Image (cartoon, rainbow, N blue to C red; front, side, top):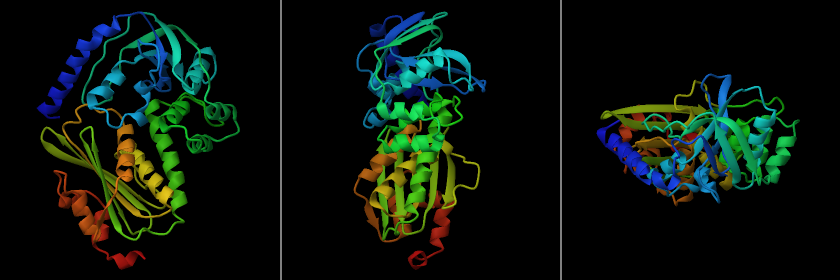
Length: 384
């Protein structure tokens, strides 16, 4: 990362420390009382025995915004990091095969809660400090739970119904919740804490995020394969949190590629993944972002009952100094698809328009992708 990124991280951390006084002894307490948004977390370290627990801020009331990525578009990077840092993570080491027992069942009730749930955690010792780097999403202080009490919960009915349906496969459970209007971030938590499917187990949060995006996007993709092709090249764009997104839709049966470009010590790096109607046929290089972006695009195609080829360009600028999760890719592409598109004359024109506001030229995008090269070898008449 550039010195600019390091300066941004340092400034954000300094400001957060300045504001600590209103939360008292957040860093050094052996207990915490507050309203969980609601939020639970399952780690991946030392799998299959992982660290599992609730996330609780040191405040009571409506804290839902602190862990609701669907509501974070328009927030600054500093605001979002503050949301993350102000959640204290309680942990206990649990086998991923443990989906029953008082502790896990309490966490499942937290995940089902329809509103923030009052939580009182007591730790074996004072909570750890926080750290911010340029490689992983920030977390607040962590404490090993001695006792945990939750009160005042009421369940979201569609989640509760799906939880008790143990004949439902995990894939179908995810789709049921999605089609019931449950936010994807909530579905991911239910998946993670072992609430879905016939053979249930805990799933590390970062894995459940990608799995949920993959299940929903693949279902929607299969739906759009029966729709008519789009009749022109369209370019959608959106920028937030130091990420520039451009989405190109073009007349073609379903093919999809995402190409990312980023800066590291002043050097431009690239990564990409692609698929056709049969799916991805190689180990994903940018897996989380790839599936999150795919979900947002197929939502648009499904809504408009059309099929197309898709290329997504993502330029990660140095201002994105602290990663905050692939939710920002999903929500960024969703915002892009809400805007009025630019209609391009042809595919090459679309690629030029898509890269116009980026520091990466369209020839560089072509060089590091696969579908663009294929498209330049064909004419529009090949796809009708």
